Image 1 (cartoon, rainbow, N blue to C red):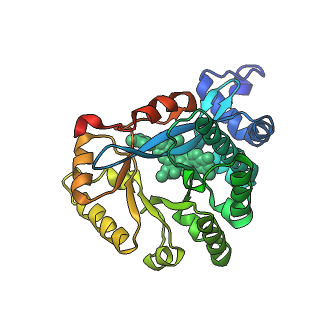
Image 2 (image 1 turned 45 degrees about the vertical axis):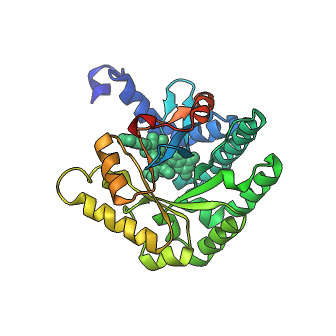
Image 3 (image 1 turned 90 degrees about the vertical axis):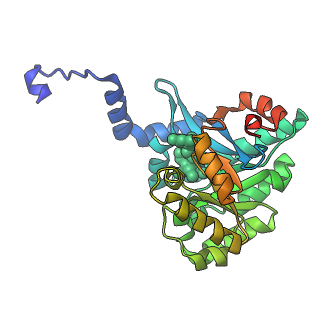
Amino acid sequence: SAKADGKNKVRVYDKKLYEEIELRVDGERQLARAIQEDHFIVYYQPRVEAQTGRMVGMEALVRWAHPERGLIAPDHFIPLAESTGMILPLGRLVMEKVFCQIAAWQFQKLAVVPVSVNVSARQFDEGNVSEFIASCLNKYAVDPRFIEIELTESAMMGNFEQVRGEISSISALGIQIHVDDFGTGYSSLSLLYKFNMDVLKVDRAFTSQICNGKGGEIFFSSIVSMAKVLKMRVVAEGVETIEQLRVLQQLGCDEIQGYLVSKPIPSSDVPRLLDQSILLEQLN
Ligand code: C2E
Ligand code: MG
Ligand code: MG
Ligand code: MG
């Protein structure tokens, strides 16, 4: 081993790899501390109407501002937060940041659009999400139409009565519910029907298949038809090219999100977008 070879010296040549390992070994402690000290920031990614390019919403995406490692993407810590239960305090932290931000934009008289917040299965199972959201609506005096909730299909597969109760309480507050990463989980038509949600966000994996000449657009088109039956809007995630947008417009996809429009941006860049309102003007 390296230890035996180097007379008790461990040589680490790859700083990135070292940090990766450190986070894996020490991640739980670091994450707990980051939550306690609030080392998180929220980025925002716009969502636009497919036909007009008009901005109709933004998604809140959390980043860990690590003192040594810089910004860490959610895929590197959300799974740990979920498995340890730290997603409960972290989820509340993110939710509260978003509310606070919307209130600040409103105070600045900006034309705010609805912001969707990702909520994990575990928060739905044991987190009293609807109660917490209700308290935030009160505390920040934010209109419920400016907050939306994204949950994945797997979140819907938890304790049925608990999840259905949470979803209907959230809807009753006047908050729209989006099904995130649609197509990657196992939700059934009947589940979607019973839960009565507002938006289907089709996973990037399917968006990336619509221009490859292998029939991916037929698959997408059948999702659009199904959504119409369920009276849900369809959002394509991960739209990266004009060609994809053109196909999505023809398929009747309602809204799009992706690098073609904008990457997720820090909150300080949002006012500029809100002033623009039409983000894909050059297409029309
Ligand atoms: P998601 O909710 O499906 O969010 C979309 C992800 O796709 C974001 O990654 C976004 O940056 C990325 N994306 C958007 N457009 C494109 C595109 O055109 N091309 C490509 N290649 N990627 C695109 P991000 O920000 O790294 O977040 C990853 C996941 O982490 C999210 O997936 C969500 O599941 C989770 N997440 C983020 N913030 C939160 C949070 O506050 N709470 C919880 N529970 N989960 C969160
Ligand atoms: Mg999402
Ligand atoms: Mg998604
Ligand atoms: Mg995802």
